Image 1 (tube, rainbow, N blue to C red):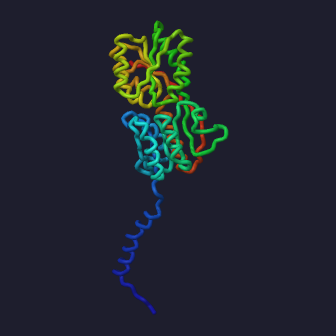
Image 2 (cartoon, rainbow, N blue to C red):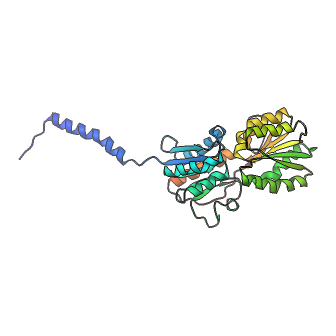
Image 3 (cartoon, one colour):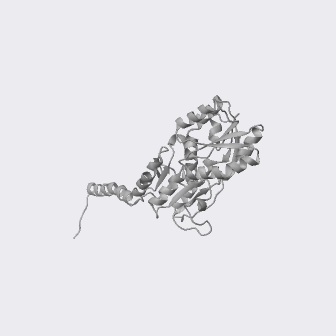
Length: 307
């Protein structure tokens, strides 16, 4: 038996098939990969670092909103929220988690998952810090950038002493919520200061009001200089520190270039945006199937002075 199909019916049949093809193609496309970005800070302090992270992703072929999604979770310097935010990213089954801003984010991410790859940016030896057990024999689901920023304390004090050779008393600010930072400052700073004939006083501040209160005491007994330690919260208050130092006419050494960009006198530390760029490269490689393994990557130390 012969079946004849007219021209109109033939066009209708092909038209229906053409309409169906895109639906089938879309159904076969893989889901867009998702990166969970967990940070203890607020986004207003992260513009340069996020730009670096996105540049690193782009080096591996990933562009946010085009072929990769980034879910941001900001703790806004509230450490109690970090475990909850990490658990939320795990529930959303992100492909890789970037944890930064404070060691609390690293440990919260590690506690939340043993399977999702975790990227960290740590300012000291990750083996001594604890998230990984070995660099020589990597295992587990953590990898990241380690730039040994806290080992720079002696050099930072040396540069500050060269800037203010008559200085005798230096006040150093730390965030008590960042225990490793406080521990390293208390361990390294006093001996480095003594070698230069300096007396160092460590002040703990974890809120903007405490920073103002600390500077208010300087009206009665001013130090010869100040030194702001490495910490996400302290970095987020950089404008406040710079303005207070200028108001009290105090020479200041900072950890990051961001302080100098808002008027700070001098900084010496790691190129943090480039460390985030390297983390973005790692994230892209992991999304492409690379196995995470702890590495020690040194971002270059830089010195910056305000004009």
